[in-house]
Length: 378
Ligand SMILES: Cc1cc2nc3c(=O)[nH]c(=O)nc-3n(C[C@H](O)[C@H](O)[C@H](O)COP(=O)(O)OP(=O)(O)OC[C@H]3O[C@@H](n4cnc5c(N)ncnc54)[C@H](O)[C@@H]3O)c2cc1C
Image (cartoon, rainbow, N blue to C red):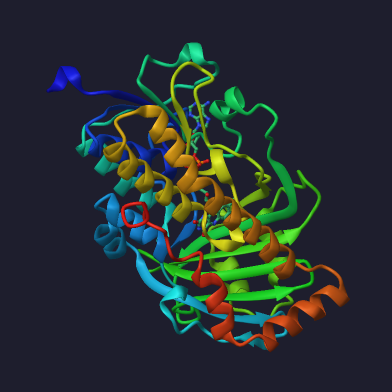
């Protein structure tokens, strides 16, 4: 019944917007996704690697994409944490809580784009939404436009991103005999670095350091290598082997918690925020993408359950606000622990990581990794 289907506009074709588009199309919405960027070029992949944990994979199962994403990525787990001198502070995880899929962002975006388009969604690239006058008329509006969301500003103008105090270099390189087969992390004073295998026989590395906002160098690759050089870590060799022009540097911002709702009717069109537009956590927790998948899967389940749109919006807030904001808070706590930057606080951190058995650490993260599926939890 083509003429009777509802319509939705999604602002942003990042991971959250594409996942939401799939959820909506699965519920027979006519979906238009509007993206200010260019159509991604699979031959010149931008971005780096990401980890999708078990809660994200469970949410992907609701979107019919778990198997495909698992096959495309590398199944791996959270491994050891070491000091900069190479002293092992914690052992690899042994329970399911530590398992995740490592995948290049571009590989994941391509899978999501293909699926959304197969389901009939239209993606309009190189189009910027500046005001609600730029929006096509629709029954539902999804704000998936990232941490500096324009859609969020219309409904919650006081909520602004904040600088975390840290900047992060990232790179992707061909894996070699030094590449670990699981996520390995090193911590020094004010520094955290990690490396993980991803698809295509590649490895993704990151180095995060405390730094003033906006600091830049003409040669980010050399600066990244100098930062990790003193560490007893194979990341140094991986940085040297990375094509220098492809090394990315981003200051890490986050969204303070405190939003009581992710939904609004203020523009006249029922609006739902998803992904970083609603709850941008620190990357330490590795939960940004998995939370976006939880958003989309929840949207799909609730759209099928509630005919009344106000009830659906209220149910979305009930299922998503508290959980995603707890994860945000945990990500800040983890960031402060991992990037402790004076001799006393970093010694305390090392002591805590060494003293707390791995199993206890796993029990703490286990809560994050269990998505309370609204299909089961009414
Ligand atoms: C250094 C770093 C490392 C990370 N590592 C991980 C990790 O390992 N695992 C993980 O799960 N997460 C990780 N994250 C977090 C993760 O990248 C984000 O949570 C995720 O990308 C959010 O997706 P999104 O679609 O909500 O936002 P975005 O990816 O920001 O996408 C928003 C899209 O909206 C578009 N847009 C914005 N405004 C407009 C407009 N006005 N009109 C039209 N289009 C617009 C943008 O062009 C963009 O394509 C990391 C983040 C950082 C910074």
